[in-house]
Length: 153
Image 1 (cartoon, rainbow, N blue to C red):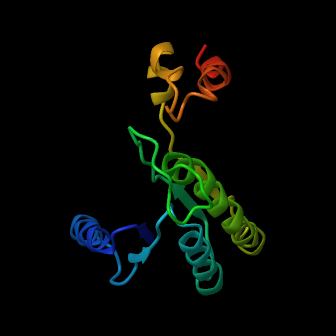
Image 2 (cartoon, helix red, strand yellow):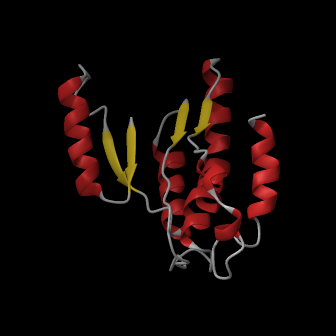
């Protein structure tokens, strides 16, 4: 089990909690650095996973941020932090890890699981907020509501 964490200190604390709560073989939980605000961090994490892990059966993409102001991610190709973290880097990671998961499926006769943990927070965007200049939702809020909102009907 790999805990991919922006803060390895917090990751180590989570690792200790998991190991003290669940009977696991020693060393089964590892903490690896991963900052989804940095494309280089994502690529390095994926290269490490693909080259060092024997197999990969599950990827649980659970990281997300919610910025209240427009903040550009410093190492994510000019993307805003929320978009870089919740969308672009998450999908980059998934695409880079998918071949390793397909190999595990073929070699071990398993069905790998790639899961994106998401939120319905887009439902709370109001017209007043979504039309405010400078708001990160301004250019796409109506389309997001229309497309994602339709899924909940």
